[in-house]
Length: 509
Ligand SMILES: *[C@@H]1O[C@H](CO)[C@@H](O)[C@H](O)[C@H]1NC(C)=O
Ligand SMILES: *[C@@H]1O[C@H](CO)[C@@H](O)[C@H](O)[C@H]1NC(C)=O
Ligand SMILES: *[C@@H]1O[C@H](CO)[C@@H](O)[C@H](O)[C@H]1NC(C)=O
Ligand SMILES: *[C@@H]1O[C@H](CO)[C@@H](O)[C@H](O)[C@H]1NC(C)=O
Ligand SMILES: *[C@@H]1O[C@H](CO)[C@@H](O)[C@H](O)[C@H]1NC(C)=O
Ligand SMILES: *[C@@H]1O[C@H](CO)[C@@H](O)[C@H](O)[C@H]1NC(C)=O
Ligand SMILES: *[C@@H]1O[C@H](CO)[C@@H](O)[C@H](O)[C@H]1NC(C)=O
Ligand SMILES: *[C@@H]1O[C@H](CO)[C@@H](O)[C@H](O)[C@H]1NC(C)=O
Ligand SMILES: *[C@@H]1O[C@H](CO)[C@@H](O)[C@H](O)[C@H]1NC(C)=O
Ligand SMILES: *[C@@H]1O[C@H](CO)[C@@H](O)[C@H](O)[C@H]1NC(C)=O
Ligand SMILES: *[C@@H]1O[C@H](CO)[C@@H](O)[C@H](O)[C@H]1NC(C)=O
Ligand SMILES: *[C@@H]1O[C@H](CO)[C@@H](O)[C@H](O)[C@H]1NC(C)=O
Image (tube, rainbow, N blue to C red; front, side, top):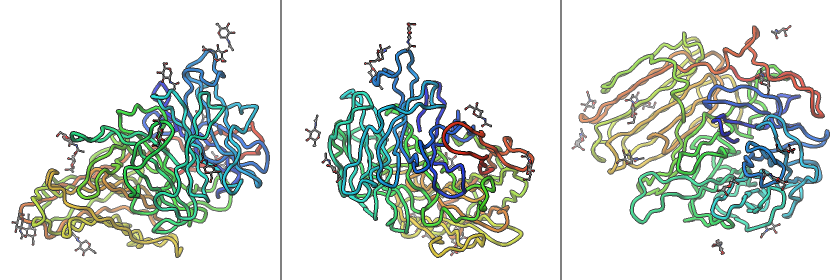
């Protein structure tokens, strides 16, 4: 993912144009000015033969012609990706002269051949520009060795091994999709750096809740070595449908970095009931909403990567209901008439003044008035605050690995402003929760048999000094106005490349 000089966001994604399951990987492509309303673009990178897959990677803008491939332009894009074959995985590159829409593969690929203990296990290059040494830096996974290799290059073609970051954090059974990024520290105190580096490593399988999840370590990077500040692994999500998050290339380090992750879990992504057997019949898998990130010093936990939905104002439709002094009350919102079927809600428990005031509960329930199915969650204030989520009361998908319930425990922050906050984005088959403006986040897909159409927000047993302020908005539909009479958004029908392609469909939300 990268953002170009005009502020247009480019997202390349793992795409199988010939089946509704993973496989036959291509780089699909979509662009957006606001990170919510996307335009399907032509497939960006095709496999070179029937046995190749174009796996994950990254893209950068070679504004200074470091590669020598862009004599007369400052918007040259270089894609760096893994080519997977049954024998090996290599890192290849391709050049785009039209700002990222079409790519010409480098004639002397690969630029990196496998090392490690297994030639089929070397993938997911993430490349950044490191200003202090005027060098490109790649982080790439040796998955089964639990190693992130760091390589440097002056021209994106010749890569030199610089160091290995090995066996940190949770290993699971594989490391995948390493990402690293410099993130600003909000309100750094004297002696604290204004920036830390986050090394994000996705693991699959072997996540604590099963399957796939992403973790990150915070530390320092000097152009060749990443040195973590501590041995603590932190998770980006407390549910289990947030994997392989990637950061956009091209966002200045003094701004909040932006990531998008894949909202699913390898344990069940190929069998979820949003698609049938035929290509074009539904969709499988969605992306998370874009997340903005900064680092915040939390009680006991220390520096934590805050993840909040960025640019949400671009998709807010209208306020459906609000109550700034709900007290121990309940708010019902019928949203059956909301065209997108998608909502955003906020609930702030305010007026807290220390641990004695942490009383009561706050709950939300999004339910189907037709079937009674629901997705619910809330905050339990005593014991500081626990945030929970339950997707188990939906009946559209039965799978032993489709975990029902998730929770996260926080500490009351005496230096905060006396509040606990919960916000959520509820789409037709995915919910994303943000606690305290994103100090913790949960991403969870869910599959009711009938649409959810009623939201209930309620607080009970709050301390007499506390109240709840709640509001609910409908969200705009970002794909519906692109749909045809079959409610399908067709991608580009592409005939170039080596694959025979048919139309594809995207989720209508
Ligand atoms: C197809 O791709 C072209 C060029 O990449 C783009 O301009 C156009 O908007 C795309 N069409 C659709 C329906 O997404
Ligand atoms: C491009 O060149 C400028 C001036 O030398 C330098 O500051 C910048 O870091 C370079 N950026 C890239 C991506 O090459
Ligand atoms: C870009 O690099 C190529 C190869 O090094 C060189 O021939 C060309 O002059 C460069 N163009 C610019 C504008 O620096
Ligand atoms: C680059 O621009 C120069 C000056 O306009 C021109 O002579 C040259 O042919 C161009 N090179 C390429 C590769 O387009
Ligand atoms: C990094 O680890 C890989 C995989 O174990 C190994 O092949 C490679 O030689 C190591 N590189 C360095 C620079 O230590
Ligand atoms: C940082 O400090 C400013 C000014 O005191 C405050 O408004 C802001 O909420 C703080 N940010 C965080 C994340 O605590
Ligand atoms: C970068 O850090 C490593 C590990 O601490 C150290 O060995 C190396 O000398 C450092 N490089 C530079 C250029 O400071
Ligand atoms: C409400 O909070 C105040 C301030 O912390 C505390 O003194 C009081 O005992 C709490 N009330 C109840 C009923 O717990
Ligand atoms: C929230 O749900 C929990 C668990 O079902 C229940 O114990 C609690 O009373 C509920 N609180 C509210 C405010 O509805
Ligand atoms: C909420 O309920 C608690 C416990 O029943 C009570 O102490 C508190 O005063 C109530 N708050 C309001 C605003 O009614
Ligand atoms: C909740 O708190 C946030 C942060 O202070 C504020 O921006 C938002 O307007 C509040 N929402 C409601 C519904 O009170
Ligand atoms: C809608 O689907 C039907 C049945 O598959 C098909 O015949 C028709 O061409 C489709 N309409 C459009 C606009 O694609």
